[in-house]
Length: 409
Image 1: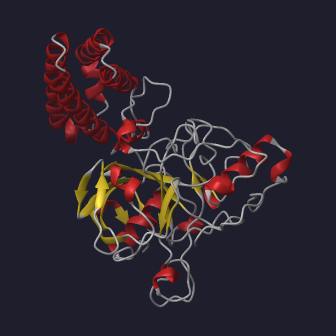
Image 2 (image 1 turned 60 degrees about the vertical axis):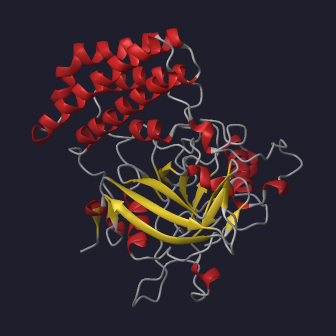
Image 3 (image 1 turned 30 degrees about the horizontal axis):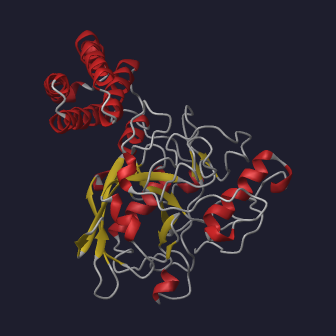
């Protein structure tokens, strides 16, 4: 469904109070205004926020900074089953990433040394969390990480930022793989029986979109021209098994192939309404042989919970303002669009959030817990800044993790 464009109070089915009467209601109202209406139509009674596109180059922020905008870091933090030793290693490596990006060589060196110390002193405890079948691969990853960190220390000592950054990226890539091995043995989160007829994503899948401009135009990225762009998204089934499964299933069906971008307002880029493509009157996906659009429930996950909340926002569940496991903190975060007054009305429309820390500060972005965040753009996010209405999704492909999609029996 295309989201409404008329600003009005935002309530949800089952909400027990009127939005404007409480802090949670005010937050919900602002969330509706931000997502459901053009930004220039913000109510005069609300703060007039600067509307400037956020660019992918602003993503370089590790967990050591006040606002963690790094999608890869957020994805690592979203993986279940990680022992405290792994989280300690991650925190040190990401602190090194953050301080190195700000040329704070002394702090970067200290964080790197701390990470190596964790690896050497607690490596056996980390290995103990890895399933037996993956022990050898984990050992290789740990050795590779140690080698990368050794190079980091050498390059940082002589202020060689480029090589140090490359070594740091290699270490974090290995860490992501290691954490993936550990998370793979966790049991899938429970999904209520009423949603068993929907596709589910048990772990993660990678999706690539190839996009092009309408007409004969090209993408202009910092003065460089591109005939087409490629966007790589990591879809998370650990925290959004139903939403992620629905999206990956639609990609595999070719649903988004040839579809145009239907909204681009500097805050979100959105698509997925087949009625705007001349594919009938339905605003969502209708399976072959069905008379009804396939809807998926609102699926939001409070950090620290064992499973998602279905059909209710954080506010409706009495936990407004709680942290989400996958927050709308990163440029290119994937969100599922839905009707304003119906929590369980999502179908095929989704959006990329063009994150801006002034509009959506971490922990106060007003979208967490009201819309399902089901993954992040991990490569090519810069193209979103020049992706406009009428531009075309040439092809959408599941490039890895297709085996994690479970179709209803």
